[in-house]
Image (cartoon, rainbow over all chains, first blue to last red; front, side):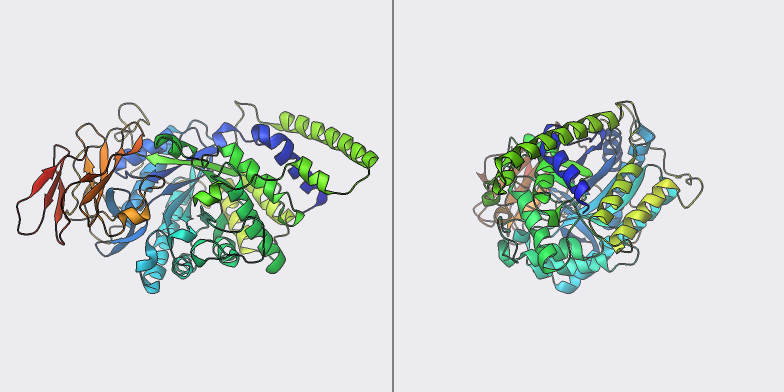
Length: 314
Length: 243
């Protein structure tokens, strides 16, 4: 990065960011959701309820599963939904947003998300196929949005992978399926780096036998990956873990990462009665991420545009 | 994320980092003065360039900024990720079609009737072992059956762990008041229940022993009253209150 830009970014993150995260309007602090309801009227109402927002967000469906022979996802106590039902819900969300949008300049860049939760029991072939079907669904939805709502929304994939949730190889199989799907859009990597090193960048271990190379590979090396990680810890350690994954890539892979946003869970914490030390606000998370990235010129980044806070859509 | 991760140290403050650099006192003072001046200038600049509350916020600017930042960070212009963002930006600036096509199903006023944007309480009753979802292959045309079909167990961050749902049978039980209960009954017969409130509240309810053990093939069916019917194969069903 150009030294002057690095200095500006550092000042922004360290001096201004703490007070107001530089220059992000409230409309760009988006809401993301754990989707436990997908009925058309619910999805449309949810889209309408986000009429005041513009930017990147994720609609999370649950773990990959199969519904009557069709790939889909779980929904935390609601019946599993196959990809056609999920796509239908997202369409209604977009329509609701388009109907209610408060400012014609607002746009939503919506990630349709799943996870690597509980996938160890599936075969690699099954996961690869599921990833491909998800990629096809996201691509078709992106085409649909570009056709009917190009001034309102764009569609992306989204993926919450967490080392504790599966073996690396299983997650890799799913991501291969998504990434190798023709025409698939980018995919927000709303992942956690649980157990990853907090002080070193030499391909150290994360939880469940994962390592920093594997984190970098899944989050960035795949062409479609758009890092947008979970920065939940109020200690800032999650930002440090991701910065060290980035630093590992810079020093060992002649690569680096670019972060498109930070995800927090402050509202989800409020909904379930509180979290202990994992309820960063949007601005805290972004400041942590920028501070750590800009603590080393090899990982510096001028700004992080996206910030979203997840909650339950009950 | 693990608890360990949540309890780690905070990032270095700029003061700490500057202290780590060996500098003469005079140099430090000079640098501090210069930094203060630049900071004040940057703050003033940020304030001046900050969009007015009524000024439109354009996502195009955000995407262009992301592209610029990526290039400034050293990503080649022909990188697939830069191209992906550029495509996204081009699409926002000038959609491939001159004018968006009319969405034949775009009128959602019926779905939004009443208080626009207000999410209504759940209606209907979920079936834990119902007839399943829509017919396969009806892309974009799926409808109905939103509240019926199989339910796979899934952890709920912070409330229901993967270990607790491992080997369990799960069911959603809508309540007459519009709330819902997500019940995971383990092989030990213990029901672990999470309440999804219509007001957005999500809460773990006390565990209850609903049966001595869950026999294979046991049917779990919500009742219209918001209770749960447990029907082991070849035995009389029982109805339990899920809180």
